Amino acid sequence: MNIKLNKKGADKIISVYWFAILILVAGGVFMMVSTFYNSPYDVRGLEAEILSDKVADCISNQGQLNFNLIEEDGKFSEAFKNNFLNNCKIILNENKPEYYFEVNFYGVDDTSNSVFDISYGNQNWKAGCSIQEDKEHEKLSKCLEKRFYAVGEDNVQYLIKVLSIVGKAEKNVR
Image 1 (cartoon, one colour):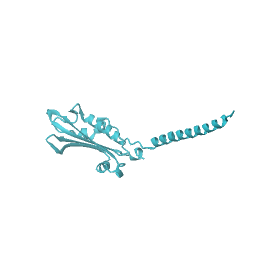
Image 2 (spheres, one colour):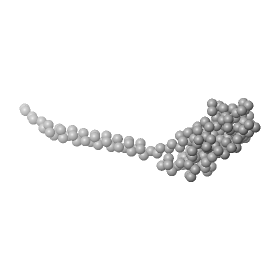
Image 3 (tube, rainbow, N blue to C red):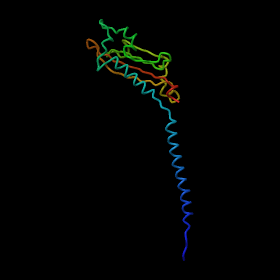
Image 4 (cartoon, helix red, strand yellow):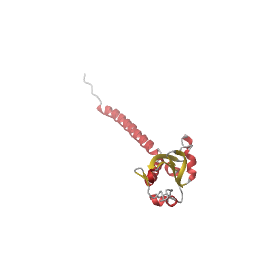
């Protein structure tokens, strides 16, 4: 018996499976890319960390307080406080303040009463720090508090708390 097989029919069946696999792979790649690029980029936490690092670097260098921060009589300089942004070379948008930072200096023996403080920005963002852990309020603001110790003149030690807050919900959160 001599049976002749139709090779053209087999090629048509394979090509249908080939196109089905190609469509499935292309659809999977499309779904992965659209899922990846539709997720929001929330960089407010990183911005808050950069802001607090910039403030901390201006206040203290290698554990020593900035020499401009304390006057000759041993008191903190109000002139440095009033011109803090220029002294530290920090540029924030003045028209629409989306940032807030607060620096509190405490004596090592009394960490409940602030000796000196510096703050700048929109204080309304501070209210969102206490509720930012809730899922429904996570788009309000991002808060970050850093603590470190520094030594001033006459070896006086200070605990320094830097609270930095970034709002920018319209730009960073969808």
